[in-house]
Image (tube, rainbow, N blue to C red; front, side, top):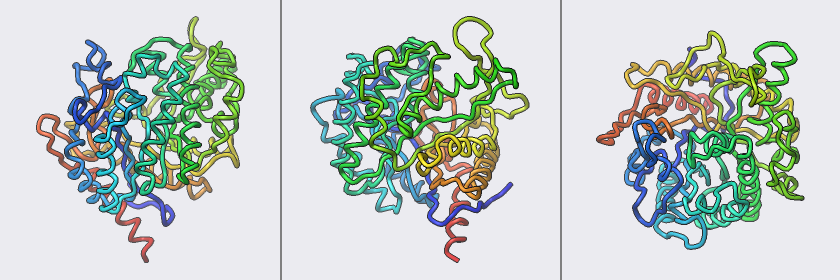
Length: 446
């Protein structure tokens, strides 16, 4: 197993987290309720009734966590800003204490030599906006732009690059179509206005950030889509799924059009959400970088009955993470080449903004996570050698944390967190990643 990878000088090594998954302090210092506070309180919504009320208590322990980052030798830290902590109802009055927390966080990161990479929306929509329709309401996009401007005006003098949204596909499908995530709506394809309004929000915020001289990224969860066979039916099903999962969230931003969704039975205007000029607006700000969250490929077969125009099927012989996700490292390299083949010159530089795996707590000495990271970094280095422009790698995650509907049952962290005592204990993968970063830096000092 390799312990060093041929990646260029200036390649950025990082780790990632998200506000609701680590901060806790949900009722402190003026923070308003989010959709996840409300959803997690719903009986049966989250495994074992777990909530993010305390999570990793990062709100109070951020200096301890930054010390862990410094111990890793990280170049960068990707975190998310809690919209309800900054604008408690989602619109109107700004909470000074919320902004002050991120001020302190950014200053402490910079003092530790770590570049902050904030994400403005990682699924914790203020409940006040959800009460008015949430992402199904076009107005939410404009409220997001206002919030983005508030945060950028406070932190933009020290933070050069920003991510607007995290994984709009996952938030749309799990939150609005299937109901397994907050806010828990079950609209199936009629959830797609939420996708469009998130992309509209991205574009409005991106324009404001660019006006302030800041760089803008968008992080998508992308997956290689493999037909289960060479049959025309399976290939058509895979194309339909690719349009929904991948291209719906990249085509408008990168090439200024939505993909053909007719195989899904979805109207071109996404049930009235797309207004004249919207797609040009989404495309016009451009991207300074594409954030790629990669976990696994998806294998697709023809539908087995009425309903969806595809069926998701297992990938045979693939090992599984503790979450049950298939581990296929070379699919990351394939995905990177596919993106370049599809988008050509329109594809901006890529940063891997999430990649990691859940490992059972009783697994020792954390070898599955080390193997996951090593094999994915190996193929990433191959892709870079083959000409793909990848600028950095942020593993998910720094800490064991609140894994959404799974509560505290899935552990993705380089650092073990005892959720009863909040004691942090670096795992074997922490030491491995630290040594990897140090060897890379030393290689480029020679």
